[in-house]
Length: 430
Image 1 (cartoon, rainbow, N blue to C red):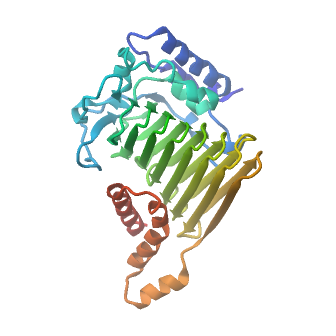
Image 2 (image 1 turned 135 degrees about the vertical axis):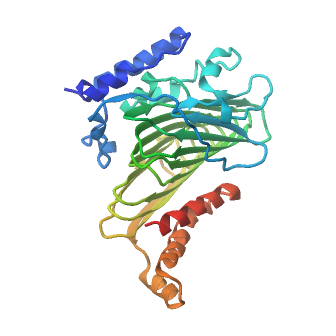
Image 3 (image 1 turned 45 degrees about the vertical axis):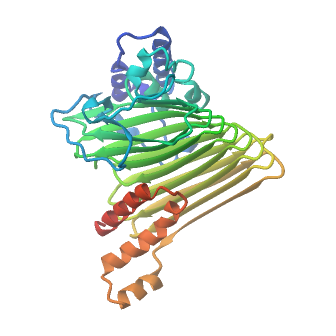
């Protein structure tokens, strides 16, 4: 018996939404997602990649597709200046809080449902293509339920474009789910700074299963800053599959600080000579929260480069997971990959599971990894306390100093400044 035989599985498949009108290719794509998910169901802890993260509790209770809540309050925007802004509420595009700009022909930034209607955008060849190469049951579930999300498709735009995506996740009475599907295509030296935020303003129970496909080609550059701050009873799973082409750059900085369970999974394929990826993550969890960062960087071509730096703080009975994998294919001579994971435990009950991995099938490469887990520096804490600094403030100073190393690898001061504000508020509250 597979997981799909459970009540939860039947509800998800039965609720697969239908776009009107539905192109035949899209209906076929959604049906493949239905069939593939039905054959395996939700991931189990017996699977190596899900060994430390159990989502079988999703099988409990009645679930339904989320709708727009009656009252929607915007928590505000992080980025100021000339910014393209898209707002989604419970996974549904909300134009009232969105601000779109006109772009040159054959370029588009906007909601998925509109992109499907515009022939000039032409996303048929890309939607589903990257996910198909890294099939997983949770992304198949997203494909089965494709309804809304955002599309960024740019070519030959050398000036950087700033975009902020705000996901307001309220849930509703009962248990609801939504499956945002996003597509980013950058070509011919295009540059984008993208901030994507998940904000939960309630204690409602909801399941947010987001999938993004990202294609960065021909000297383009994407900087993605993701803030995962869903509500206390939320389950948030984000899957991002990336292809980085010749002399192109992908950067990702994530901050996880909310939700009952958060899993942020990124697969980066370095698909061109001189391609590079820089990945950073900060995770904060307390009480009985569970936070999981799972990363795979696959070097497929010569002279590709990657960095992974993930640091976190765990308090209460929280559990953290880091699974970092660097793979160097047999044709990727001259590849350079580095992976570092460090975690500080702020209580005796907090637990961290760290599993770094190197797979090297080429010569003349430089790869390294290192992972540590421990307590706050007691001597440094004593020093601050001896100078009259209260315990809570002293802990905050040390935790912020510990985590700030990640931010120093990224140069967007307006974003990293907001991250530091989250550090301070979180530490003072634990």
